[in-house]
Image 1 (cartoon, rainbow, N blue to C red):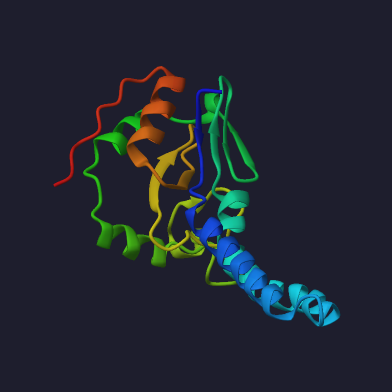
Image 2 (cartoon, helix red, strand yellow):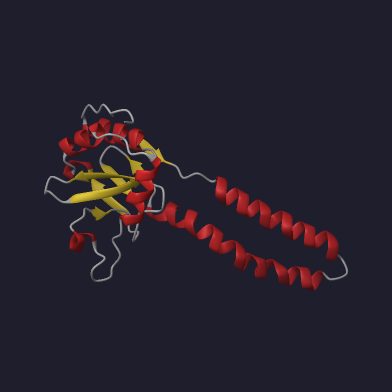
Length: 180
């Protein structure tokens, strides 16, 4: 494995920690007298925890990046490295790095939902890779091309590390530009 982009687990840890502390606090106040009530509250409060964990879970499923000797894997998609245009990786690495505000604006406008009018091709944009319908807010995106000319939008947490690893896997020298 040449490169694995791991997702941060801070938000998940905070949510699960608050859940466990809350359930422990309720247990201290209700146990052993009302064990049935306390046991019934676990799944009820779990319904509040699950929506908080849906975004990290979907990022793990749809935006996980792995590069090995032959394949670029983004989410549920596998792209052979032989089909990626090396010059598009070089040009993406030489583009100026976006600011945080530009990353938020780009992520809010990058949609590829399976709804008429919201497909990336219908809007004239590159196809979103990974299986998700949109880029999570605040994530950076890299647009590269295949040898067939198809544009691919790849959400990434670390643009420079991703492009360096992809360039190394393709045998291309990449020199990212500093922030403007």
